[in-house]
Amino acid sequence: MIEIKRDRLLFGIFLVILFFYLPKDIYFPSQKSLTPITNPYPPPATPSIPQQGSNTIFLPVILKPQDRYYAQVQKDGQFYGVWATIETPNPVIREPYFSYASINIIGPDGKWIETGLDKGLYTDCIPKFIWAIQPGTLMVVLSPLPTVGMAYQYLIEKITDGQWSLQIITTSGYVIFNTNINNPGLNFGTKIQATGEVNSVSKLNDMGVAGLLYLKWKMANSNWSYWNGYTNGVVNFPPYQIVGVPPDPSNNVQISGNNGNPIPPDAPCP
Image 1 (cartoon, rainbow, N blue to C red):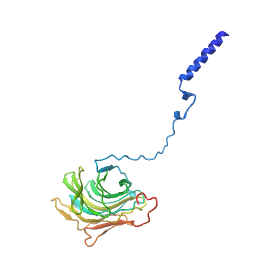
Image 2: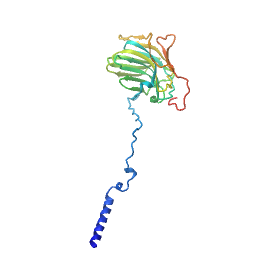
Image 3: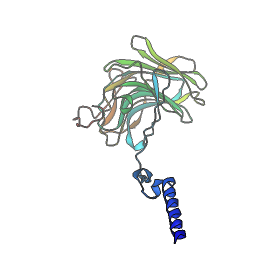
Image 4: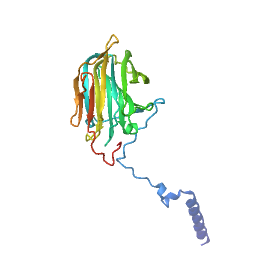
């Protein structure tokens, strides 16, 4: 009898020691020890925006072609630069993501360089200077900023094969932004364009009202020539349009579209 009691006592001591040394979650599962259920359809991650120097940001923007609408003119040939004066509009952005006015030069293999101004979710809902290359990404100039209602000259010209210069200049001739752009394989353009564009699934965004004026292109001998005519590029009318501006409609055009319509209370950038 004494032996049995002693065995039971030793067994009880063993259980007490086991209780203190084993993880408590075995006996008392807590919320901390439970594995949370992972949502099989998580929301898309917001891309980070690394800084590119003190006055530009890099924006990895991927957009669906059917979300974008254009009003543009173009010229075909062989070009070593493109130049235009663009008026600064303040378009209403009623739905994501942007509206902009720009010029570009496109090479025979589809590579291009573009510059102009943009207003949208990626520019803090105020007009800003932008430039971009293909292949590549959109660059937003943080400083200086354009003034709504004022016009600026935008100039892209070849330095050497694959190397291009971009300048933004006031109408009085003061260079306020310049950068050199490396785009290997883009040695000349076979197409130049003056463009208004919106990213707006339902065509609700303004294109703004802006002149793209004094359209010029650069020859192989470094001389500049006026366009003196163009053909229509993509024009998604209505509500967007591009028209010639008298008295020189061959070298001056105006973009517009969807302007003056009511602004919904939830507009991203009124």
